[in-house]
Image 1 (cartoon, rainbow, N blue to C red):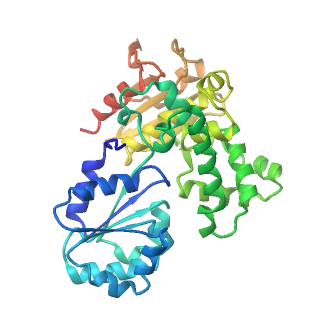
Image 2 (cartoon, rainbow, N blue to C red):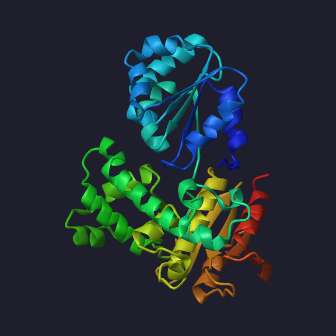
Image 3 (cartoon, helix red, strand yellow):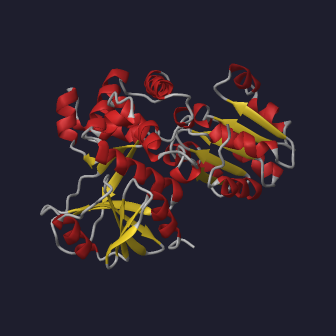
Length: 385
Protein backbone atom coordinates (compact mmCIF):
# COMPACT_ATOMS: atom_id res chain seq x y z
CA UNK A 1 0.00 0.00 0.00
CA UNK A 2 1.47 3.36 -1.04
CA UNK A 3 0.68 6.44 1.01
CA UNK A 4 1.55 9.81 -0.57
CA UNK A 5 4.22 11.73 1.37
CA UNK A 6 4.00 15.47 1.93
CA UNK A 7 7.51 16.07 0.57
CA UNK A 8 7.17 13.72 -2.42
CA UNK A 9 6.90 16.58 -4.91
CA UNK A 10 9.80 18.40 -3.27
CA UNK A 11 11.97 15.29 -3.66
CA UNK A 12 10.89 14.88 -7.28
CA UNK A 13 11.80 18.51 -8.02
CA UNK A 14 15.24 17.93 -6.46
CA UNK A 15 15.80 14.85 -8.65
CA UNK A 16 14.91 16.87 -11.75
CA UNK A 17 17.26 19.75 -10.98
CA UNK A 18 20.31 18.30 -9.22
CA UNK A 19 22.88 15.74 -10.45
CA UNK A 20 22.67 13.81 -7.16
CA UNK A 21 19.76 13.73 -4.73
CA UNK A 22 20.34 12.08 -1.35
CA UNK A 23 17.25 10.91 0.52
CA UNK A 24 18.12 10.18 4.12
CA UNK A 25 16.14 8.89 7.06
CA UNK A 26 15.76 5.85 9.33
CA UNK A 27 15.55 2.34 7.95
CA UNK A 28 12.08 1.14 6.99
CA UNK A 29 10.57 4.66 6.97
CA UNK A 30 9.48 4.37 3.33
CA UNK A 31 12.42 5.81 1.36
CA UNK A 32 12.65 2.89 -1.08
CA UNK A 33 8.87 2.72 -1.55
CA UNK A 34 8.64 6.44 -2.29
CA UNK A 35 11.56 6.44 -4.75
CA UNK A 36 10.27 3.38 -6.61
CA UNK A 37 6.91 5.12 -6.91
CA UNK A 38 8.55 8.29 -8.26
CA UNK A 39 10.77 6.32 -10.65
CA UNK A 40 7.82 4.35 -12.05
CA UNK A 41 6.52 7.52 -13.71
CA UNK A 42 9.89 9.12 -14.45
CA UNK A 43 10.21 10.23 -18.10
CA UNK A 44 13.61 8.61 -18.67
CA UNK A 45 14.79 5.03 -18.10
CA UNK A 46 15.71 4.17 -14.51
CA UNK A 47 17.93 1.68 -12.68
CA UNK A 48 17.52 0.65 -9.03
CA UNK A 49 20.38 -0.91 -7.05
CA UNK A 50 19.98 -2.19 -3.48
CA UNK A 51 23.33 -2.58 -1.75
CA UNK A 52 21.82 -5.09 0.67
CA UNK A 53 21.15 -7.43 -2.27
CA UNK A 54 24.16 -9.60 -3.20
CA UNK A 55 23.28 -9.60 -6.90
CA UNK A 56 23.29 -5.80 -6.99
CA UNK A 57 26.55 -5.63 -5.05
CA UNK A 58 28.04 -8.01 -7.62
CA UNK A 59 27.23 -5.52 -10.37
CA UNK A 60 29.40 -2.97 -8.61
CA UNK A 61 32.52 -5.11 -8.40
CA UNK A 62 33.75 -2.91 -11.23
CA UNK A 63 31.58 0.06 -10.35
CA UNK A 64 33.23 2.49 -12.77
CA UNK A 65 32.67 0.23 -15.77
CA UNK A 66 29.10 -0.68 -14.77
CA UNK A 67 27.88 2.83 -13.93
CA UNK A 68 29.63 4.40 -16.92
CA UNK A 69 27.41 2.27 -19.14
CA UNK A 70 24.21 3.61 -17.51
CA UNK A 71 24.70 7.24 -18.55
CA UNK A 72 21.21 7.79 -19.96
CA UNK A 73 19.41 6.38 -16.93
CA UNK A 74 18.38 7.80 -13.57
CA UNK A 75 20.33 5.52 -11.21
CA UNK A 76 19.11 4.90 -7.66
CA UNK A 77 21.55 3.39 -5.14
CA UNK A 78 19.88 2.24 -1.91
CA UNK A 79 21.74 2.00 1.44
CA UNK A 80 24.65 4.03 0.07
CA UNK A 81 26.35 4.20 3.49
CA UNK A 82 27.34 0.54 3.02
CA UNK A 83 29.65 1.50 0.15
CA UNK A 84 30.92 5.06 0.84
CA UNK A 85 33.84 4.56 -1.57
CA UNK A 86 31.31 5.12 -4.39
CA UNK A 87 31.07 8.86 -3.70
CA UNK A 88 34.31 9.93 -5.47
CA UNK A 89 33.24 7.88 -8.50
CA UNK A 90 29.83 9.57 -8.52
CA UNK A 91 31.55 12.96 -8.49
CA UNK A 92 33.67 11.99 -11.47
CA UNK A 93 30.67 10.67 -13.41
CA UNK A 94 28.36 13.63 -12.77
CA UNK A 95 31.14 16.02 -13.82
CA UNK A 96 31.64 14.03 -17.01
CA UNK A 97 27.94 13.72 -17.81
CA UNK A 98 27.20 17.37 -16.88
CA UNK A 99 23.44 17.02 -16.48
CA UNK A 100 20.80 16.81 -13.73
CA UNK A 101 19.03 13.58 -12.72
CA UNK A 102 22.10 11.34 -12.65
CA UNK A 103 21.81 9.62 -9.25
CA UNK A 104 19.42 9.20 -6.35
CA UNK A 105 21.15 7.81 -3.27
CA UNK A 106 19.27 6.52 -0.24
CA UNK A 107 20.83 6.23 3.21
CA UNK A 108 19.85 5.44 6.77
CA UNK A 109 22.76 7.42 8.17
CA UNK A 110 22.52 11.10 8.98
CA UNK A 111 23.49 13.88 6.65
CA UNK A 112 26.55 14.61 8.81
CA UNK A 113 27.80 11.03 8.51
CA UNK A 114 27.15 10.86 4.78
CA UNK A 115 28.82 14.21 4.22
CA UNK A 116 32.05 12.79 5.65
CA UNK A 117 32.10 10.45 2.68
CA UNK A 118 30.53 12.75 0.09
CA UNK A 119 32.54 15.95 0.51
CA UNK A 120 33.72 15.56 -3.07
CA UNK A 121 30.07 16.02 -4.17
CA UNK A 122 29.80 19.52 -2.72
CA UNK A 123 27.75 21.68 -5.08
CA UNK A 124 26.43 18.61 -6.89
CA UNK A 125 24.26 16.98 -4.23
CA UNK A 126 21.11 18.02 -2.38
CA UNK A 127 19.87 16.32 0.79
CA UNK A 128 16.22 15.55 1.51
CA UNK A 129 15.05 13.84 4.68
CA UNK A 130 12.18 11.37 4.95
CA UNK A 131 10.70 10.47 8.33
CA UNK A 132 8.31 7.74 9.42
CA UNK A 133 4.71 8.55 8.52
CA UNK A 134 3.44 11.89 9.77
CA UNK A 135 -0.04 12.39 11.21
CA UNK A 136 -1.02 14.45 8.16
CA UNK A 137 -0.11 11.51 5.91
CA UNK A 138 -2.50 9.12 7.69
CA UNK A 139 -6.11 9.93 6.80
CA UNK A 140 -8.82 8.17 8.82
CA UNK A 141 -6.39 6.68 11.36
CA UNK A 142 -7.34 7.11 15.05
CA UNK A 143 -4.80 9.03 17.11
CA UNK A 144 -4.80 6.13 19.60
CA UNK A 145 -3.41 3.84 16.90
CA UNK A 146 -0.70 6.39 16.07
CA UNK A 147 0.27 6.51 19.75
CA UNK A 148 0.86 2.77 20.11
CA UNK A 149 2.17 1.89 16.63
CA UNK A 150 4.17 4.97 15.67
CA UNK A 151 4.91 6.05 12.12
CA UNK A 152 6.95 3.22 10.61
CA UNK A 153 4.76 1.99 7.72
CA UNK A 154 5.02 -1.75 8.47
CA UNK A 155 4.02 -1.12 12.06
CA UNK A 156 1.23 1.36 11.34
CA UNK A 157 -0.28 -0.73 8.52
CA UNK A 158 0.02 -4.12 10.29
CA UNK A 159 -3.17 -6.18 10.37
CA UNK A 160 -3.26 -6.29 14.18
CA UNK A 161 -1.68 -4.80 17.29
CA UNK A 162 0.09 -8.11 17.89
CA UNK A 163 1.71 -8.11 14.44
CA UNK A 164 2.68 -4.45 14.88
CA UNK A 165 4.30 -5.19 18.26
CA UNK A 166 6.19 -8.17 16.82
CA UNK A 167 7.43 -6.09 13.87
CA UNK A 168 8.66 -3.32 16.18
CA UNK A 169 10.58 -5.81 18.32
CA UNK A 170 12.04 -7.42 15.21
CA UNK A 171 13.08 -3.97 13.95
CA UNK A 172 14.84 -3.22 17.25
CA UNK A 173 16.66 -6.57 17.23
CA UNK A 174 17.72 -6.24 13.59
CA UNK A 175 18.93 -2.70 14.15
CA UNK A 176 21.05 -3.76 17.12
CA UNK A 177 22.34 -7.07 15.77
CA UNK A 178 22.91 -6.22 12.11
CA UNK A 179 22.49 -2.58 11.11
CA UNK A 180 24.88 -1.22 13.72
CA UNK A 181 27.64 -3.66 12.76
CA UNK A 182 28.88 -1.17 10.19
CA UNK A 183 29.73 1.25 13.02
CA UNK A 184 32.69 0.48 15.27
CA UNK A 185 33.19 0.53 19.05
CA UNK A 186 29.79 -0.44 20.35
CA UNK A 187 28.33 -3.49 22.12
CA UNK A 188 24.79 -4.57 21.10
CA UNK A 189 23.86 -5.67 24.64
CA UNK A 190 24.94 -2.33 26.14
CA UNK A 191 23.20 -0.41 23.38
CA UNK A 192 19.94 -2.29 24.02
CA UNK A 193 20.11 -1.54 27.75
CA UNK A 194 20.82 2.12 27.05
CA UNK A 195 17.96 2.32 24.56
CA UNK A 196 15.57 0.82 27.13
CA UNK A 197 16.81 3.26 29.79
CA UNK A 198 16.22 6.15 27.40
CA UNK A 199 12.68 4.88 26.82
CA UNK A 200 12.03 5.11 30.58
CA UNK A 201 13.38 8.68 30.74
CA UNK A 202 12.05 9.68 27.32
CA UNK A 203 11.81 13.46 26.96
CA UNK A 204 13.89 14.21 30.04
CA UNK A 205 17.19 16.06 30.21
CA UNK A 206 20.00 13.58 29.76
CA UNK A 207 22.33 12.77 32.65
CA UNK A 208 25.33 10.99 31.14
CA UNK A 209 26.79 10.21 34.57
CA UNK A 210 23.66 8.48 35.88
CA UNK A 211 23.26 6.45 32.68
CA UNK A 212 26.96 5.55 32.65
CA UNK A 213 26.90 4.37 36.27
CA UNK A 214 23.83 2.21 35.59
CA UNK A 215 25.49 0.64 32.54
CA UNK A 216 28.95 0.34 34.04
CA UNK A 217 30.53 2.43 31.28
CA UNK A 218 32.04 5.91 31.07
CA UNK A 219 30.11 9.13 30.50
CA UNK A 220 31.87 9.50 27.15
CA UNK A 221 30.75 6.03 26.07
CA UNK A 222 27.13 6.94 26.85
CA UNK A 223 27.50 10.16 24.86
CA UNK A 224 29.03 8.26 21.93
CA UNK A 225 26.20 5.73 21.99
CA UNK A 226 23.55 8.46 22.05
CA UNK A 227 25.33 10.23 19.19
CA UNK A 228 25.21 6.96 17.22
CA UNK A 229 21.49 6.53 17.92
CA UNK A 230 20.95 10.13 16.82
CA UNK A 231 22.99 9.71 13.63
CA UNK A 232 20.88 6.67 12.69
CA UNK A 233 17.62 8.53 13.49
CA UNK A 234 16.68 6.38 16.48
CA UNK A 235 16.75 9.23 18.98
CA UNK A 236 16.24 12.97 18.72
CA UNK A 237 18.29 15.35 20.85
CA UNK A 238 16.66 18.72 21.61
CA UNK A 239 18.97 21.46 22.78
CA UNK A 240 17.98 24.13 25.33
CA UNK A 241 16.78 27.52 24.14
CA UNK A 242 19.46 30.01 25.09
CA UNK A 243 18.44 33.61 25.69
CA UNK A 244 20.16 36.67 27.12
CA UNK A 245 17.77 37.19 30.03
CA UNK A 246 20.34 36.42 32.71
CA UNK A 247 18.33 33.53 34.15
CA UNK A 248 19.90 30.25 35.22
CA UNK A 249 18.91 27.93 32.38
CA UNK A 250 19.02 24.16 32.27
CA UNK A 251 21.81 23.46 29.78
CA UNK A 252 21.62 19.67 29.38
CA UNK A 253 19.75 18.55 26.22
CA UNK A 254 16.55 16.52 26.26
CA UNK A 255 16.62 13.11 24.55
CA UNK A 256 13.58 11.55 22.88
CA UNK A 257 13.18 8.16 21.26
CA UNK A 258 12.29 9.22 17.71
CA UNK A 259 9.13 7.13 17.24
CA UNK A 260 6.24 6.46 19.61
CA UNK A 261 5.93 2.86 18.46
CA UNK A 262 9.60 2.18 19.24
CA UNK A 263 9.15 3.70 22.73
CA UNK A 264 6.12 1.49 23.36
CA UNK A 265 7.95 -1.64 22.20
CA UNK A 266 11.01 -0.86 24.35
CA UNK A 267 8.65 -0.48 27.33
CA UNK A 268 6.82 -3.73 26.37
CA UNK A 269 3.54 -1.83 25.93
CA UNK A 270 1.25 -3.79 23.59
CA UNK A 271 -1.91 -1.67 23.35
CA UNK A 272 -3.24 1.84 23.77
CA UNK A 273 -5.10 0.69 26.90
CA UNK A 274 -1.77 -0.19 28.52
CA UNK A 275 -0.16 2.99 27.24
CA UNK A 276 -2.88 5.38 28.39
CA UNK A 277 -2.31 4.42 32.04
CA UNK A 278 1.47 4.32 31.79
CA UNK A 279 3.69 7.07 33.30
CA UNK A 280 5.32 7.46 29.86
CA UNK A 281 2.06 8.56 28.20
CA UNK A 282 2.72 12.30 28.36
CA UNK A 283 6.31 11.98 27.13
CA UNK A 284 5.17 9.79 24.23
CA UNK A 285 2.74 12.56 23.21
CA UNK A 286 5.73 14.93 23.19
CA UNK A 287 7.58 12.39 21.00
CA UNK A 288 4.69 12.42 18.50
CA UNK A 289 4.51 16.22 18.38
CA UNK A 290 8.30 16.53 18.00
CA UNK A 291 8.43 13.92 15.21
CA UNK A 292 5.73 15.77 13.28
CA UNK A 293 7.45 19.13 13.76
CA UNK A 294 10.75 17.68 12.48
CA UNK A 295 9.11 15.98 9.52
CA UNK A 296 7.01 18.96 8.44
CA UNK A 297 9.53 21.73 9.13
CA UNK A 298 12.98 20.15 8.59
CA UNK A 299 14.78 23.51 8.45
CA UNK A 300 13.25 24.90 11.63
CA UNK A 301 15.26 25.26 14.81
CA UNK A 302 13.53 23.43 17.67
CA UNK A 303 14.64 23.86 21.28
CA UNK A 304 13.14 23.60 24.77
CA UNK A 305 13.08 26.17 27.56
CA UNK A 306 13.68 25.42 31.22
CA UNK A 307 15.13 27.44 34.07
CA UNK A 308 16.53 26.31 37.39
CA UNK A 309 13.50 28.03 38.97
CA UNK A 310 11.01 25.74 37.24
CA UNK A 311 9.85 27.82 34.27
CA UNK A 312 9.48 25.54 31.25
CA UNK A 313 8.01 25.10 27.78
CA UNK A 314 8.29 21.81 25.88
CA UNK A 315 9.33 23.26 22.50
CA UNK A 316 10.40 26.63 21.18
CA UNK A 317 10.35 26.63 17.38
CA UNK A 318 11.79 29.37 15.18
CA UNK A 319 10.14 29.81 11.77
CA UNK A 320 11.03 32.73 9.53
CA UNK A 321 12.61 34.49 12.52
CA UNK A 322 9.35 34.17 14.44
CA UNK A 323 9.46 32.41 17.81
CA UNK A 324 6.55 30.10 18.64
CA UNK A 325 6.08 28.34 21.99
CA UNK A 326 4.56 24.85 22.02
CA UNK A 327 3.42 23.03 25.14
CA UNK A 328 2.26 19.41 24.86
CA UNK A 329 -0.56 18.25 27.11
CA UNK A 330 -1.84 14.68 26.86
CA UNK A 331 -5.24 15.72 28.15
CA UNK A 332 -8.57 16.77 26.71
CA UNK A 333 -8.86 19.55 29.32
CA UNK A 334 -5.36 21.04 29.57
CA UNK A 335 -4.19 23.66 32.02
CA UNK A 336 -0.92 25.56 32.07
CA UNK A 337 1.26 25.55 35.16
CA UNK A 338 2.76 28.59 36.82
CA UNK A 339 6.09 27.52 35.32
CA UNK A 340 4.54 27.49 31.84
CA UNK A 341 3.22 31.03 32.25
CA UNK A 342 6.58 32.29 33.54
CA UNK A 343 8.34 30.69 30.57
CA UNK A 344 5.92 32.30 28.11
CA UNK A 345 6.58 35.66 29.74
CA UNK A 346 10.34 35.05 29.53
CA UNK A 347 10.34 33.94 25.90
CA UNK A 348 7.70 36.41 24.66
CA UNK A 349 6.75 34.23 21.66
CA UNK A 350 4.72 35.43 18.71
CA UNK A 351 2.10 32.86 19.71
CA UNK A 352 1.75 29.93 22.12
CA UNK A 353 0.07 26.67 21.18
CA UNK A 354 -1.03 24.03 23.67
CA UNK A 355 -1.29 20.87 21.58
CA UNK A 356 -3.55 18.02 22.74
CA UNK A 357 -4.49 14.58 21.30
CA UNK A 358 -7.96 15.71 20.30
CA UNK A 359 -9.67 17.04 17.20
CA UNK A 360 -10.92 20.11 19.06
CA UNK A 361 -9.29 23.53 19.25
CA UNK A 362 -10.11 26.67 21.21
CA UNK A 363 -8.59 29.90 22.52
CA UNK A 364 -7.31 29.56 26.10
CA UNK A 365 -6.41 33.24 26.54
CA UNK A 366 -4.90 36.07 24.55
CA UNK A 367 -2.03 34.70 22.48
CA UNK A 368 -2.50 31.15 23.82
CA UNK A 369 -4.50 28.61 21.83
CA UNK A 370 -5.35 24.98 22.51
CA UNK A 371 -5.06 23.02 19.26
CA UNK A 372 -5.06 19.54 17.81
CA UNK A 373 -1.91 18.25 16.12
CA UNK A 374 -3.43 18.87 12.69
CA UNK A 375 -4.37 22.46 13.54
CA UNK A 376 -0.93 23.06 15.05
CA UNK A 377 0.77 22.09 11.78
CA UNK A 378 -1.73 24.15 9.78
CA UNK A 379 -1.10 27.24 11.90
CA UNK A 380 2.69 26.86 11.82
CA UNK A 381 2.57 26.58 8.04
CA UNK A 382 1.31 30.17 7.98
CA UNK A 383 4.71 31.29 9.24
CA UNK A 384 6.46 29.42 6.41
CA UNK A 385 4.35 30.58 3.45
